Image (spheres, rainbow, N blue to C red):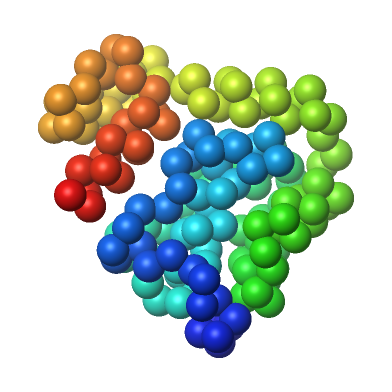
Length: 150
């Protein structure tokens, strides 16, 4: 467990949301959000957010790394840039074109198109006033984050 001093710049996710899953750090979607959740988890201020969750693992799986690997970097107090540099040199090598294609495709995922997620997603979208047919997972998460911290 890292000391609070190392993670003093971590977001308090009981008071604010992590960065959008669509925010691209080094071209990767999800990475900045995962970093925010990981730092908050180490600080005990993650609230209802979970690090190393299925969404984080979409990125970790793409790169062939684990949440435990990333958590070690965060616990050591590494910056966003240092985590990005590590990610680019570990796991499965990816070209900038592969990263962009993966990020574009991941950002476009609509859970309404997934039969095993459709009913849940439609209910969540209805709760937020979104059209589940047109809403991407990232759109849903962004709106849910905004509503959570009104």
